[in-house]
Image (cartoon, rainbow, N blue to C red):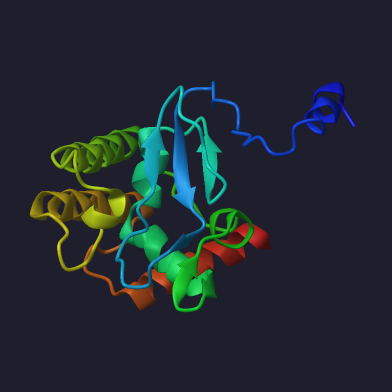
Length: 184
């Protein structure tokens, strides 16, 4: 046991917070999210935030990563492969994130995804008094946020070379083909 950890035994009643995250931006990924949501409400945080225990983090993440993860493409994958807690989606780094086939975009496509990802964050910022749970309620999601997600979805689909009109089932089928190629 390290010296610091050993000293903590003397005050077991004190709440212990994680140390502040010091390495730039990161994506906040909830471990569980409601089954009614079209999108998992991932967060995009920066220096000084303290991650909690009911989330996972993706350190060093860029807007590009946020845009891909907040897309219909990733959500289709997540709905297909994730576990469930009751009816809710249980997001897992091992099963959902680590097995997700990422696109290989051109520099223009990557830049477009960064722009649309920022558009999602900008749309969220229009509602500073609303939580992510409020913003992503399927019945009350603000129109600006829906529009920002639609623009992001189109940009991500193009980066994959997918038809923007394809069904979710077709999208998952293409992702599974990509996954098979990556693992063979």
